[in-house]
Image 1 (cartoon, protein in one colour):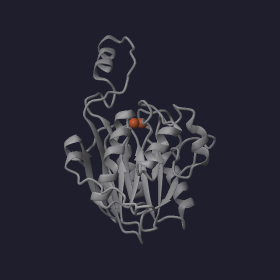
Image 2 (cartoon, rainbow, N blue to C red):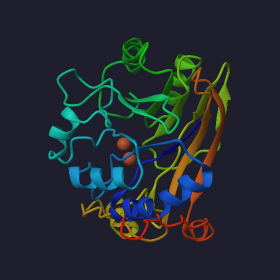
Image 3 (cartoon, helix red, strand yellow):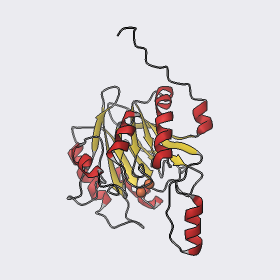
Image 4 (cartoon, protein in one colour):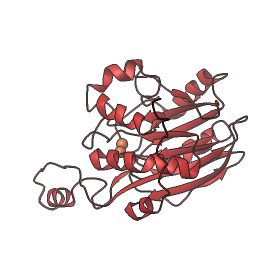
Length: 277
Ligand SMILES: [Fe+2]
Ligand SMILES: [Fe+2]
């Protein structure tokens, strides 16, 4: 089974590029399930129910968030009732949302995803290690294929989680820094890992935001609106091949698709509807 995991989708450029690229990519790579981190999907911070629906229609099966989860409050009701999206599992118990999300892959295998926030240079949260242990206990008997979105600033936080969970989950995949790393690997006995899968959004930017605005604020200390940039949209993520019966990861491959890469993807054949049907 092949699982595609997309890193932080940023603003309309990210959402639009997902809509354009995902169907062709899923068909070309023969993907069985798609997971995406969408904490920046609505104008760079948070996600509205409308954008969530667009992402689901584009082919994303499961959605994770991060530190920006509640920036758009309209999402709270959806987080409480929808089984396909989860909050960081080490958030307070009273924070709205489920601690994992679950969906069947194309071959019927149940796949679960959970998200954890790191504790270095981030808002204080509960222990991510113990939170992961608790969720894995709940998932016993429900899913063997488990993907962990490790949403953290520090690479060490991500490595520590990968080693804490190796052999117990299919993959620990990093998000939040918006920069793809080149350290993808399989930790014995079968957990895929990468420090960060990268950003799905505009790359002519500072991590998705307009260069002029972020730079002028950095230089002058005068605040400005960090609007989402628009140039050079790309889709970034990783494809993890998992043994359905055991949940063991067999391989991990980094992925970065830009406009040129999208242009050479074989187009998806339009659905055929018999005349009069
Ligand atoms: Fe992000
Ligand atoms: Fe984040």
